[in-house]
Image (tube, rainbow, N blue to C red; front, side, top):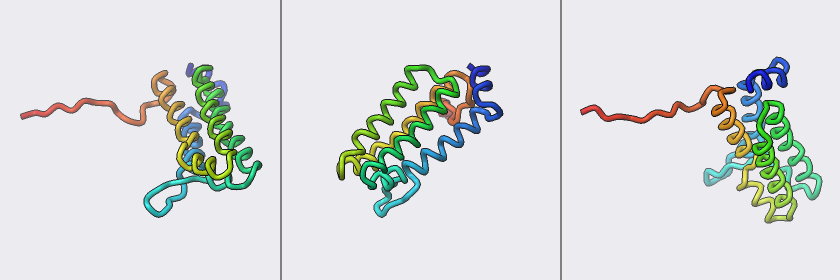
Length: 138
């Protein structure tokens, strides 16, 4: 897995790729804070443009899936990520309801989390959270 990921990245480490993808997902899904502590991203805003807006955001979201493939993610994970992008694109194309769905679904954040979890479990990426159990000493 590591050799495959290293060859595919041509100079970029999985950590660098994940940092880029997490930034992109943040911009697309949660970059803008609305009153009431609700977050939306450019995906919801650009999606307001009829037809072309959802096509643009779906193409950008597909880049995350493409990078996952370059990192050596298995086919089942690629399929799941592609399904998230497809759901976001198809439902997002529906006027008004789709725009509300775009603001709530956050497919890009989901896909980056799926990819991070896979890379951490496979050993290609260091865990971002240390999983420990606390013991009380009395």
